[in-house]
Amino acid sequence: MKKTSNKVVLIGAGAVGTSFMYSAINQGIASDYVLIDAFPQAAQGNALDLADTMAVLPVPFTSIKAGDYSDCGDADVIVITAGRPQKEGETRLEMVAGNAVIMKSIAEEVKKSGFQGITVIASNPVDVLTLVYQEVTGFDQHKVIGSGTTLDSARLRRLVAEKLNVSAEAVDTFLAGEHGDSSVAVWSHASVMGQPISKYIAEGKITQAELDQIRDEAVHMAYKIIELKRATFYGIGVCLTKIVKAVLRNERTTLMVGAKLNGEYGNKDLYTGVPAIIGQNGWESIIEWDLTTAEQDLFNQSCATLSTTIAKARDAIK
Image (cartoon, rainbow, N blue to C red; front, side, top):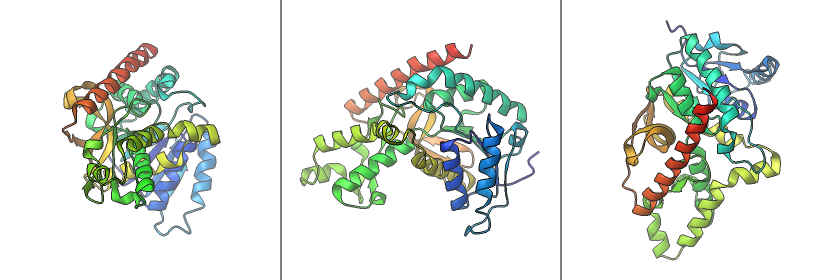
């Protein structure tokens, strides 16, 4: 039986996980936090470090500690960022075998804890590992959310905003499909300050070639950051906070998360980045846009790439 409210458990107290935790406590999204890591000292050290913020935050939390899987039983949300980091020049999909084994182990422990809440996953390759977790646990697919293309879309928004010299908040642009090289820019549903992106093209403020270049830059941003500082973590940390906050506060907002397709967009049996409504029950429904023929073809190719990698993940955890 649930005994606490607004309790968030983080599994994986590395750079991504602690960036999420730091963002979450600064935004005051929960009251109790637990850190779990394969290296308990890392969880303990980070919990102590983060606890030092309690006295000065504008919205203080109640508790933060290092824990173990028994702490998952009464949690509202579990955030999983565990796994080895992406190496320089390595694609996310190339990480699949080792991280699939790690994810299976985590999934088994979480299930044993009696957890009944919502799981948000950012471990890479996130689309594939979200499916691994859902299949191993047998949890309701709606209660398992991948970070999807939330970060990718945020990068796209920023780059378009810089090009048009407007606030990133005024830009609605989206990358769908794999969180990786095959993600698809859905320009047919892009807008800036309420005006379709096609209007800006017609007015000569931006060209399709420039948009294509921006898409490529957004998709490959992680490679650039990893080359410069070996890892990416701040952006995804804030994106995870946005997803978790939408769950805890039942915002029913729409985000480009990893949701499981069951025929939507002509694909099924995989998690990938699509627009979905997020609330207290997880991802509640997928919004199906009318894609152009070219966008649909690219989305199908992205899903096919993921399906191939899913097969490798399943082989790795047999």
